Image 1 (cartoon, rainbow, N blue to C red):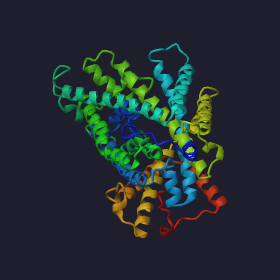
Image 2: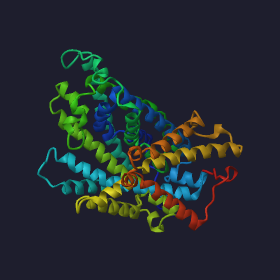
Image 3: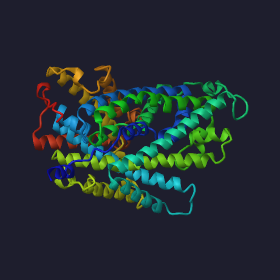
Image 4: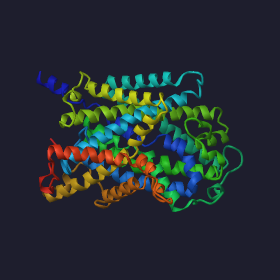
Length: 483
C-alpha cells in the first residue's frame, strides 16, 4: 500500500534512454532551420550564417553540458528552477520557474496558429480554428496518456525531422558534385552576390539572436530528468550528442544551402509558414527534381510545429507541478492521476494557451502581440539561469570538499563554459533590439515591446524575495543532497 501511494504522489520514471536522446536531438530542430535559414544566408551571406549558428551552437553546447552535470547528479523535474533555488537564491528559482512556464504557455498559442497556417496549404477553405482545436486536442491526448505517451510522440516527431535533414544533406552533396540534378554546382555560390560575409557586424549580431531562438527548446532535456529511467546514464549520453547534432543538422545543412543557392537569390527573403515554396529546403529538393517538394517540406515543418506544441504542454505541466512541490504554486497543481500526469497543471496550461490563442483571433490582435512580446526573452533568461546555477553548483561542490569524481557526468571547460554561455546570453538579452537606441532619439515604444520580459522577471524575483525574505545562499550552505 505504501508503494502504491508513493507512486501516486511522484512522477513516473518511464522515459527511456531512446526517448531522452531523441528529445535532445529534436529539441533544437524547428522552423528556424527549415524556414529562417534562407533569410539568414540572404542577410549575412553563407559564411555569416554558418558563423552565427556555429557560435550560438557553441554557447548551447556549454549550456547543455552545464545542465547535464547538474541533472545527471540531481535529476529533478524542476531542473534549472530547482537548481536556482538550491544553489543561488529561492527567489531566483521562483522567478525562473514561472518565467519558463509562461514562455511555453504562450508557445502553445504560437504553434496552434502556425499549425493552422500549414494545413491551409492542403486545405485552403477549412477555417483555421478547426485545425488549431484539433491540434490542441492531440496535444492533450499525448500528455494525458502518460509520460511514456509524450516520449513516444516526441521520439517519432524528432525522427521524422532528423531523417528529412539527413536526406537533404545527402541530396545536396550529390547535387554539388553533379551526381544528380544535372551539372555539378560546385562551391562558387558560397561567394556569390556580395560574398560569403556581408551586412557588417550589426547584421551578424542580429543573426546571433535569430540563431538563439532557433536553438531554444534544447533545455527541455533537463525537465525530463525527473521522469527518466536511468538519468545518470541517459542524460550524459544525450548531452554528449549535442555537439555532433549541432555540427550536422545546422552547420552542415547551412553549408549545403550556401553551396547550392547564392545569397542574393530573392527567394531566400521568404520562407515562412505562408511561403513554404520559398524554404531553402524546398528550393533544393525542387532543383533535384523531387516531385511534390513543397508538400513534403510542409509536412516536415508541420511535424516540427506539432513537436513544439506537444513539448510546450509537457514543459508547462511539469514546471507547475514542481513549483507546487516547492510551495511556490497552489498545492492543487501538484496532484497526479494514476498515470503520473499532473492533470490540474495540464488543465491550467491548456486554458491559458487556449485563451492566448483566442486573443489572436478577436479584436486587432494587440493583446496577443503583447503576450507574445512578454515571452520573447524568456528562453534566454532561462539559459542565463542555467549558466549561473552551474557555476554556483561546481563552486559549492569544491568549497564543501566533495570529490569531482563522484559526479555521474562532469562538464568540461569549467569555469569557461558557464561563464562564456552566461555572458553571451546576457549580451543577447540586452542587445535584443539595439536599433531602438541607435536612432536620432530612443524609440521607447520599441524598447518596451522588446524588453518587457525583463521587468516582468524582475517583478517575480523582487516580490517573492520581499515576501519570503530569501537570501543569497553562501557556498558552504548550498544544499547538495541529491536524495
